[in-house]
Length: 256
Image 1 (spheres, rainbow, N blue to C red):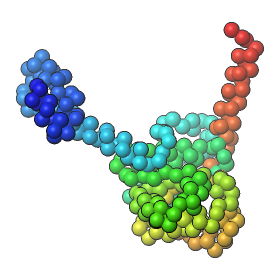
Image 2 (image 1 turned 120 degrees about the vertical axis):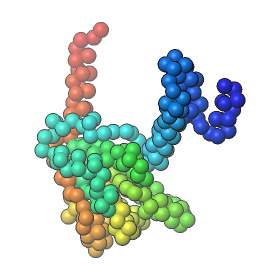
Image 3 (image 1 turned 90 degrees about the horizontal axis):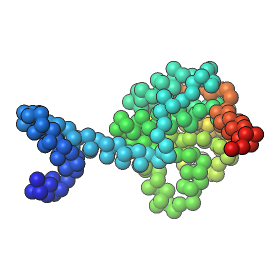
Image 4 (image 1 turned 60 degrees about the horizontal axis):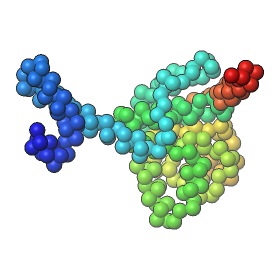
């Protein structure tokens, strides 16, 4: 076993190393045929490698949480476009080079849906870049030209780019507007998908960019092959805040 352990370490077969003793005991106890045991050992290695690859994709994506559509409370706002959300979750839009615009009121679940789609994409082997749009654009504007070129290349090459809460701060700077235009233009030519969430209706984007012509150019490409999802209804965050206040008030009235 010591020699086998050393060989597995040199070959970097950590999945087999982690389960080898268990598999040997299992084979001895059950008197399994050698090939059956060997197949299980190889599967352990494949499972470990897949797990590590998925974890690496998640860390590289920029996502700050793992969420799914199963976590979402569809009953709270029953008029949300549920079917369209699940259609995005199939990821067919990525294969077809389409985009998605999720527009609507604050707190209605736009970011949750975008993150769920992005996380599903990492699980399916896609290279994903998730950005909180306004803060990422502001950070980009502070970089050197070399840093900006590198960042632009990373964002252009991703299979799926998610720009969450675009125009949250209303007006974005000139550099941010130029970056947004470049990203949309290049990814449109390459047929690579973008998901945008925003509280701002598209008719006002020119005002937030400070340039109506630029806004028209961006929207023309962004919406040409796009799923448009409108989110209306009550705010989940206000609901949760109200529930917390109720619990606090109840606790104050009934001290331990």
